[in-house]
Length: 217
Image (cartoon, rainbow, N blue to C red; front, side, top):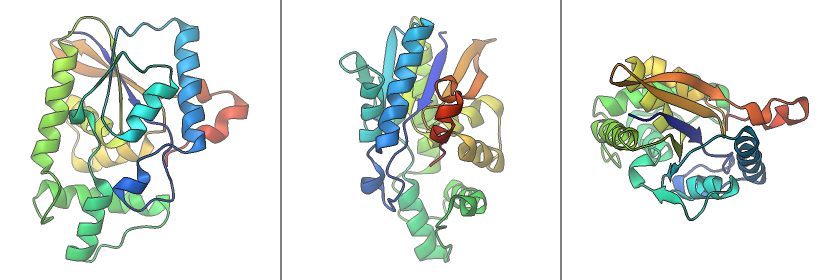
């Protein structure tokens, strides 16, 4: 098995309240991606295999990092449709969608729990399908030769960590809320299983003048 470095996309449209409007990088998101690409090149990091989801924010992040033609796009690496799930929860169960980040601390586990228990009618995909595609895609990538870099989203990264660490939904939710834009997370094969050896690393944003760019939304 080969190790996998997961990267969350750059900051997207923070004013969005639906999937389509959210799916593009902000100006800061483009800068974050460029800085990460510069850091990887300066550090001599080698990733002979590069993947991303098919969402615009994934493709723009990979391109901003300096990767274009060599990137394999895989829809299994796409994010859960959280806006769609949240809107359904509001309509069906009266759970209001928060307007600030702090509100999502309680909101996210409620939505994920209802989704996992099949209590959201008309969900764009089932919790089981999201779990399965995450595990299948990463397992296939891990079976390839050489380190792989995967540009994806925070929800999928937190699901990968849930699977690697046997987290419950509350633990997965706390992890998802912590994940920063263009952060790096590494899964390393240990004993035939992928285990986390790096989480939420942003070395390209650690200098004082870039602290403002350590964004979660």
